[in-house]
Amino acid sequence: MPSRSNMDIEAMSLLLALVCGEGHVKTCRSYCGNITVDYPFATQSGCGHFGFRDLLFCVNDVLMFHINSGSYRVLEVDYAYKSLTLHDPGMSTCESIVRGGKGNGFVLESWRAPYLNPAPDNVFMLIGCTPESPLFQGFPGKHLPCRNVSGMGCEEYYGCPAWDPGPKHVGLIYSMSPPECCSVSFQAIRAINLTKLQCQGYSSAYSLAPLRLAGPSDWSYGIRVMYSVPGDSAFCRACEATGGTCGHDSVAGGDLCLCGDWNSTTNCDSVSKSGGEPSMLSLMDALTGLLICMVIWMNTIKDFDEALSTLWSRAF
Image (cartoon, rainbow, N blue to C red; front, side):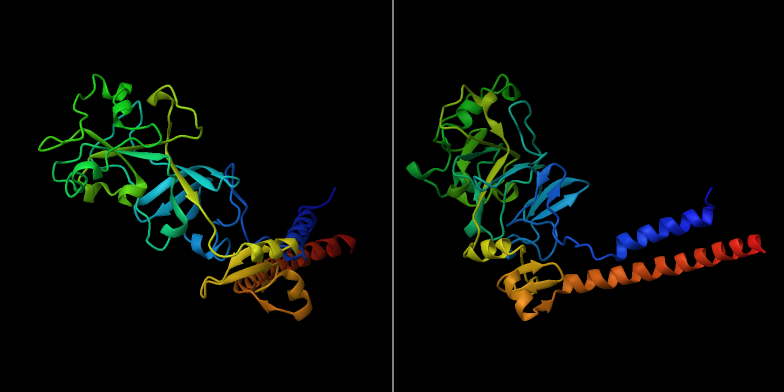
């Protein structure tokens, strides 16, 4: 039966081989919980497209989306239709009305706006806004923003159980008595800021089908955000075709093809021919690995010496 020292040596040798071996270390995480995180998104610096940096974070296997207005849980990323579905726990639904300004709303950084916006068929229903709200000031006559969006709006929303028995004032002429709910598209006001709009809460719903749904209980509640990838996608296709991972320069902001221990401004084939430059991430990984290897090796040598001494004393 092998001694404990021998087993320790075998275990340490195995760990040393795993840590210090020549296996490829993946630099970009590809999932968070059960959600795939793929280009243009990423959860690590240097991965994904530069325009989507500092946007997604994986916290305890929960994918979070963070912008100026707050953090939202990502329920789904649909790469075919280029959309994300977000959940805000402070948002009202058909079963519950949340007041007190607890919701995030939706406010984007201006530099993200050209390629990241709520879908045109996503309706925001603002709840309990004051008469002084910008919604009811400066939008005279037909330019009032309160209206249905893709067949969804406050008149239907009032039919939800959360409103029982439900407000009766749904007209478009507000004077000093605004409606309890005002439905708008994101494109109409460009920011759902509950504080600036002087609203107590909000709800958001979207439609995935062209068919008119039976009622608000059948709506999908959440924020559906559409995205587009800035620039030309040819670089990323060429990078992936040569075995690389699409990424970006965290400092300069340009596209990079991550090729294991090297980065390339073209593709991984050009790296292998030209030699390329070591990536900062690769150098840090290598240094960390070297330090770990040194610690493991020192412990291994110590255990090996103890085991050798034991065997030597038993033999003589």
